[in-house]
Image (cartoon, rainbow, N blue to C red; front, side, top):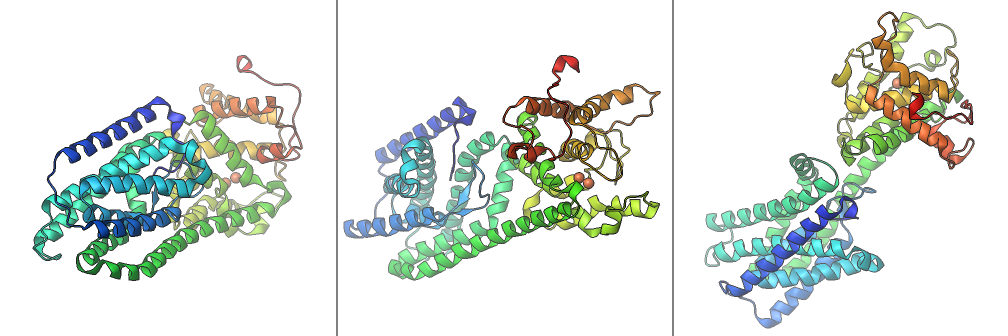
Length: 476
Ligand SMILES: [Fe+2]
Ligand SMILES: [Fe+2]
């Protein structure tokens, strides 16, 4: 279900929602005009099923399985999917739609409470698209399911499968059509990623839905016995997601411990991640999706985690390093990649971490990639990482002021042009320019004053700054 504020993309979203709502009304009108279907339920049992199923759906919606917690505009999977399949089968299409409208509004009221009135447009959209999904599935059941044949006859198995596939296709097309647009991602990529993430749950929820239908055809009240099974599935799925989140958190703690080992690198990865996040927001919002941004920020937090595999003696050595020691230090991107690559939710993160020391001109490591061969996330992290290293105290080099570090980043691309100077070009020119502008803007921001909490999110406590001088674009 659509789960959060969706109006940031303006009218397109409203138009989309409008079309879905109008389609639902037309669909409902068509169904009420065509009296094709017979309702096998008595009035009394219709009321009983209505109450039983709607209560179950409301409770299921209250406890969804959230694959991407803390993120906006996400799809959730709830056990109500199984119940909806049963609704589509038990009630005729018109009743199924009326049931969906009433139950969904009641569930949204119950789940959202006071927020309901603020999010009415979302409730309208969720109710409308679910009505289309359940109504269409119900049409397939009622038109083609043969009550005279066994539940497991070839004909009925085919009907049940087609209805299930139709359910998931229509739901995902309508819902992901909107969400992929809001999240700035190509439709098919978004669709495939979400279906893949939910595949295990879909494989469990659909058979459960069919089981409910089977029980309805034999003795529906046995369904009550399924409640413990529903509860078990809910907790198992929740547990699985919590394990993934806890693993991620453990890695962040490890990265922080590694940074905090020496005062010079204290909070380094945290600052790099904050700068990277800000840069993605100000300079890449139309170029990358929300998910890509999340992966890049996560990678920034873990970019140096591979250093835990390197001896502290080498990392803290004040004199010159031997070739072997350099090689060990230079292996940290590969070690970092190995550490994070088992995390299923980390996407391209391992590749981004592996290449965060590549340089635009191809002179970096480990693979000597150049220009756009280097993953975008690595190029973004490289600028913030180098900036933080330049303005931090380190035993092997002189600390630069923020202005000097910015100037170095800004003139980086000039180096290659002047062939006589043997300077290398380290940074992606777009990332470097955007970073230069962003930090200059931050320095003008009165809420980011030195020694403030906000300052320490982005800059080391003891960073040197030549205030009040600030550069503007014409000075570049
Ligand atoms: Fe590094
Ligand atoms: Fe670093």
